Image (cartoon, rainbow, N blue to C red; front, side):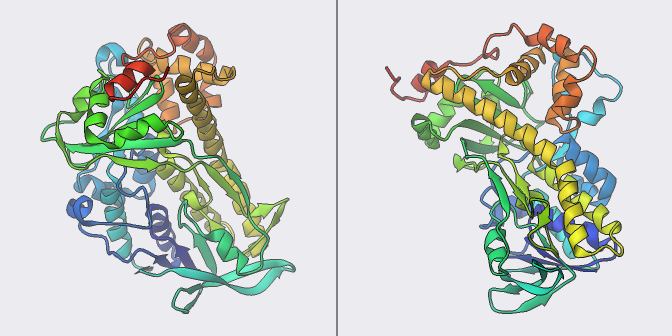
Length: 471
């Protein structure tokens, strides 16, 4: 089968690798013209202007490592050779918190790197793969319509590039990410619009990268720390680098001053569990990024595909805000399901393939999308309550999640429950559905204060940042 992949980011490249190794002929069309450099200089020299989050903090969850080592072990090895970090959260915590090493704890470890390093490794591997052709600097302008498999449902048989070139294939895969122009492309074929669920973007990220000659800074708390009106992320990366991020509400105009280096530094210094993470050489300034909201896109509407011959994967189908770091893991999970679908469709007509792909997406991706949206909504409601003083509506599910977070420092079993969810090893209903799990979580953290980690309240935060405290 010949396959055109729109988008040469992480998901598009992994799609090309997996499908080419199954014998398909894959052409990747990437609009950014820059060729990937050697991984050891990728951070310094590579710009991907079509990927707004390219130089912002990234953290791969444990599920990503599990899938990568099982399905693309050569890529995992190449990442390690390029300096990617195998990071074991449990081993990094004090034994008093982790309860000491246990059999099976390795499942929580991840393999992580900065996005330019990660993508450079995958891009260079894909470019050397027989059956893969990567065309950079190629923008897709329109889809080519062929003979419909079902009357009234347009069928894509290729694309038209910005310079008018027609490229045809048996299947078109949209892997162009959260900025996918798929609705516009579909309009060129006269299709009905896709059904999109869109969450309003609510978070803003103020981040900085650092490097040090020794091991990662000591992990004195979780990598994601909830505080009054902000979240602090301390994320390890490759080659002795890491990032520190302050996450706030996009409505919080006062915290926009955190773009200023002195204010950002003063604020991070005020959080005892994170302050030592900035005792190192900075390798970036303070980068601010307004994260988009979550979006789920369906190409099967009211039980009927709006197009055949075209499937969307990764962020083009469903993207989640960056605060939980699940994008790469969800994307890899989705691409693997695409490979399995193509292995099983011998003789299937394009209409059936479109229906089956919608079912696969609903099964593999949508539960993680829903779980992420739920957490994001609840955390943002807390932050807005902190900022405005208006109590958030009661939320029993969120109260249980906060009890789990607080309980991780008191009960090693609760800690492992949270790492299962955070690492995408198990969905929350599975974890909380186990016998005695809810009782254990509530016993460990149910009576904890609103924010049990040491750090400033809202007024102290604004004072530290040199901002006027609201009356």
